[in-house]
Image (cartoon, rainbow, N blue to C red):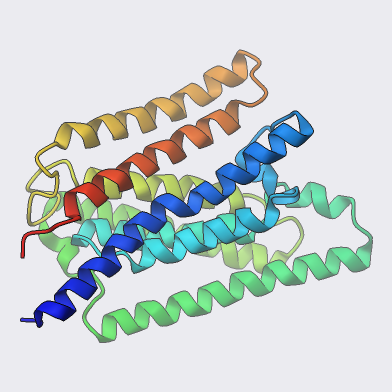
Length: 275
């Protein structure tokens, strides 16, 4: 058993990790509000800010959030899903949205520089991620065995791993092809939401999902979050059909708000854990 001082230090570290997962997105929120006031407009999607004045904060927020998701440790299924979410967040940040349109406006020399920078980012993240997985396996901290907890965790684990394999193949193909990196950004964003959904689902209080009840006595709150996430995805095409130009922007911020509320619940549930 750890000495009391080390236990308290570890508890404080986890507290600040959870709080940072709430605070970091506020950087982009504030930047977008200021941008909207000054320019009297909002973009048609959150990712569009990658190409605007909020670019640096957009990249910094997503990279930091991705690292925090990987660092955060929970039950086996949640931990695996959050590791994947952190991995996908890196590519949402580092591979620009609408890159093909941007490249078309650049001179050949500038196109080559941008393509090279994206290739370097992809290769660097893949190498570091591979080293992280190898280290996890070597230290027995990788949750592959714990995912065998039940048929449900096995199914979700295999589905998540299969989608990861497809995404990595897409990354490698686009890195070699090096023209527009089509679908990388959008796929990473979708898989980020999918992985976060699995992490939230692990808190529903169902025994097949994890070894202990992590619902904090309020599984309905997590059910509501998942239901609203699904509702937001359904609302997106409806808003598009209704002619709402900012449909994607609305849906993205709706999902971010739900994620923030999830981390708020986690911070409250684990602020003073039982010793």
